[in-house]
Image (cartoon, rainbow, N blue to C red; front, top):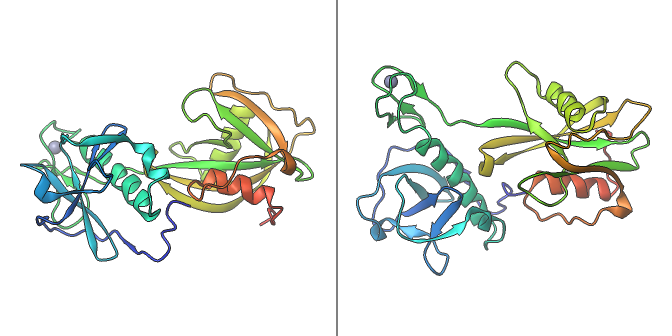
Length: 268
Ligand SMILES: [Zn+2]
């Protein structure tokens, strides 16, 4: 998955340091990452009077984030899926999550004043005392299985991502992740579930989320999906032989679909 940057080490400890001329600065616009024309990262010496914050380290390299628009070539943020070497994709998507946190919190939501980064930890602090931490939205991805575990429920969203996906949705306030699984399955395909069991999780900076993957068995006798057509284009049961989606080594959704296809143990 995107966060498995084998051979490299992600270090998110916050540092109150300034960039030097050779420092890498991750630059974005809404939906885009800005890079040099050869798709290399932009250096601090290439920027003028930019608002910059420290982001994180990978190995012994510090990555800073620009909070201003810059005049460089911009590429759709989905570039992170294909850029080589692969660990750079994790850097791009994680920096994008941080970029959105800072630009979406320019002013204090309590008093309306400009809010500034803290010096000791990764947060924004206002003189009124309000402190804002990076926002991470918890969501679930559900490998919904039929009675004999011979099929998995695949969906297609009505808008956005156009490939097959799994039933998924955001956790609501006051709800456990297991409750989110039960509610989202009922909302999207009108089925009840039992045996909700955790698989793995994944940070997903594109939507500012942390995704938790669960397997769940249907508990209804009638397993025909009652599809929520406002949210989904379709939902259908697929056997292992019918699945043609490859694991791209990036997303938890694809890993779970291919984990099922491979016939590995889903009774965990
Ligand atoms: Zn304030």
